[in-house]
Length: 243
Length: 349
Image: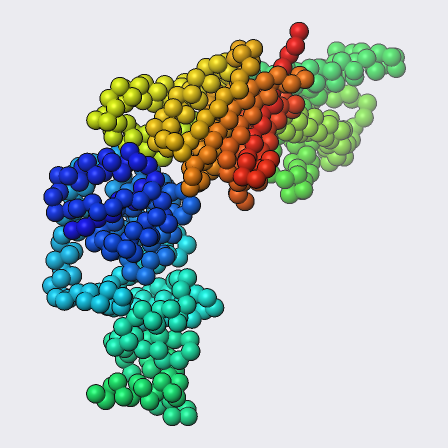
């Protein structure tokens, strides 16, 4: 398992690295001292795991994650930060408090192995093409005080709102700073279908298909959202569905 | 307190009615009335009946807590009470006159006329009695309310001071501990020093709650320890400069105030800079003030525009301790440079 440590304090990084020597399966492949450096290293090295500090100069750890197309496994590390602690408690994200207790680190790594096994079980050949996002990939979404790691497969719909995209999953619909066109390029078109100018739907979440005006279609999603398919896209939709 | 008030009440009753009794004798004397024994006894009935009825009236007032209710609501009840007690007062007098046979003998009037006349007479005593009673209680009540508000204000001030004083950022403590743990292998002697520095800070933040002011020297030592610890964390990202006039070292300052300001300079300033920054501490005399200046790299953000809680409370705290002339301000004084300035008036003898 390849890991990156992102923390603005050299001593904090070296302390964590020292503690990780007890876990030979985890190899620290890089370190970063701020968010921009971190983004660069994550994109180049594609680690399986990131230890991430929240408060850093420039951008915070949360900002860093929100900028990534694909969120890796993350274990947050923080000294004491009421705001971050609240976010962790609300969203059950995994976190370590500095100075890190060895027992807590062991638990976090244990949990990681368990999750990894589960993921591999369901998706035997993961990430053949790393540039395309699959259903098993997760994104980090932040909306005010709340934040989530969301598996793409759980997302029903992306809706364009200016420069942002509104992400519909479970009972939430936060905004992310990404254009619909950029998303479309990265998403697997077998699952995510561009229904019209403003919407990308997850085809596995479609519950009902009805004919609509002008030879278009109306899709009803599992969350009850009704999305119109433009005439041009209807042709494509029918092609894909008829095999 | 209550017992004392009760005693006071009885003295007032006796003095008031005694005054009525004496003035009646005085008027009778000046108008050359014959001071017979019977007349004197009959006159004496007035204060006696008066005390009994007004005491009853007081009991009724207290039982129904009329004093606590708004006056306009209680007014009709009071009027009835005045009439009723006047009647009772007259009845006592008439009954006593009959019983001891103190009638003047010259005027033989029927009972109802006597009652009416006597009631009107007594009303003239009972109404002033009630007015005095009520005004005393109103004055007393408003005085007590004022004392209560003052006490409350003092309590709020004290609490405010305490919360400001005991403020030490937990984020800093845990980060420092984490750095120290890493240092134990890397540089054991530095790690040992760091533990001493951290305990100094913790100790003085605990002691700060007990003291109003400390010498600037003491406060500066804490700040030096604090900055030494932050230097472990930030390494070459943090530069520190001091410019201290040694004569200012004996000046009194509020405990943990400079420390909090420097902590904010790091938290909101230096720690947000990718390439790091500096903190500069200056202490000097200007005119009639001891001037403390903290400069740091960074910007003022919206929540720091001089009306954030920390800043307002710093100003309040200074003015509570050193008077209105003491001041505190924070502003941007250039590209990426923030300056906080504390002015404490100095008594130059």
